[in-house]
Length: 145
Image 1 (tube, rainbow, N blue to C red):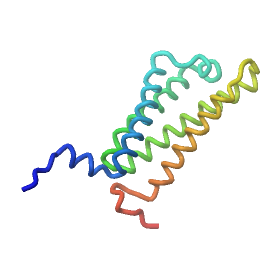
Image 2 (image 1 turned 30 degrees about the vertical axis):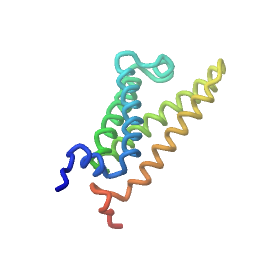
Image 3 (image 1 turned 60 degrees about the vertical axis):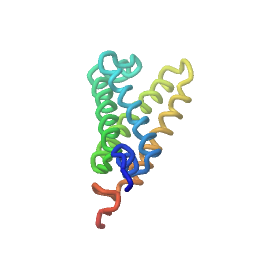
Image 4 (image 1 turned 135 degrees about the horizontal axis):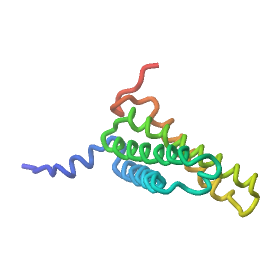
């Protein structure tokens, strides 16, 4: 008689593959942590380029998008992950636009490496969205076109 470990059984039942899911949770958690850190003290570049309240909204987009993404990965709740991805992509686009604006307007320093990393992250988040867009809740159930 084989005894099944509930933790191992749960871990193997993760909808997206355990390694992919763990890496996605790490990315989402890092973005959520960045957003939470912005809430008490938003980045000066963002505040100077936009406003204090806009900067808080940006931090909130990252925090909520990251938490939503991290929570949804293990359950395979694609609709919730899609919502989190939309918030994170929006936050990444805002940050990238601010960096480009600062580089062009200010001209001091080199912000192009930050722009490159931000663009790469946004593209990877969009790729994730495109990979799960056809799923509703369960990875085995396709949205009918």
